[in-house]
Amino acid sequence: MKNWKLHGIVLILVIISELIGTFKFKCGPGTIVLLPMLYALIIGIFLTPKFLKVVNQKDMSNAGSLITITLMLLMARYGTLIGPSLPKIIKVGPALIFQELGNIGTIFLGIPLAVMLGLKRESIGAAHSIAREPNVALISDVYGMDGAEGQGVMGVYICGTVFGTIFFGVIASFCAAYLPLHPYSLAMASGVGSASMMTASVGSLSTMFPQMKDTLAAFGAASNMLSGLDGLYMSLWIALPISEWLYRKTYKIKYGTLPTIEAKEGK
Image (cartoon, rainbow, N blue to C red; front, side, top):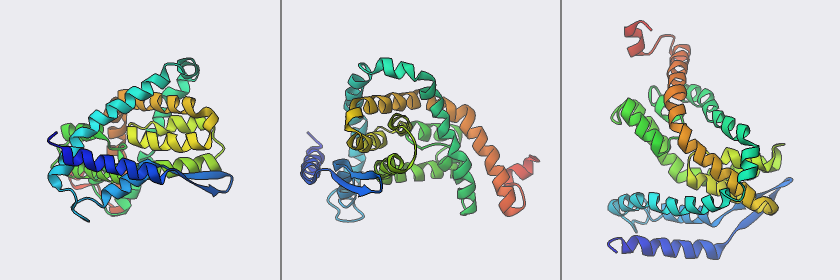
């Protein structure tokens, strides 16, 4: 009850967002879907100390501590969908496992782009993963949060929290409309380790393919669960070493020399 203010604000946001409802816009052969979750996120941004100051920094900190609890309820709901769809999930098991390697592919886009834009070792923390809680903890343990890598991972974490849900919800509709990919594969790709992003993406897909609604939710939840299980180890053993190597190569291409630390060590 100490957080009654937060609970009241959340209730109001939910009511307003649900009253607005789902908006659909035709876009070529597909549909762009705007879900109530997106409205709640946007309205919530304007309540922060940077804008209307309805909530203060302490309120925001308290709200952050409640996210894990609310996501537990969400994942429990998805657990009820995975069970009935388990035979289908097992049938595509190898695809579900190997699609996790796609998360590493973003390194080859993110790190060169970050270095070319002027970032240095911040690019390693920023681009080695989707930068959710497990990855923030990993960077903190390996490099420390006071260094450039910690600044990079926290920057992407904050951007993902603010814009990730909106981006995933919209990009899923675009991919379903314009790419020759099965909705199941898009649902699996939605499970990158963030329950909120996965929910927004699967929600858009479910609106476009209502006859597949439960199966799409099951594939997205199963993929998200696997990302949580193996994503941390993949980041530690594969993503970070690749990120370090690619950072050195890209840095040398741009600046004509190795980064300062590597140059002193003769690497």
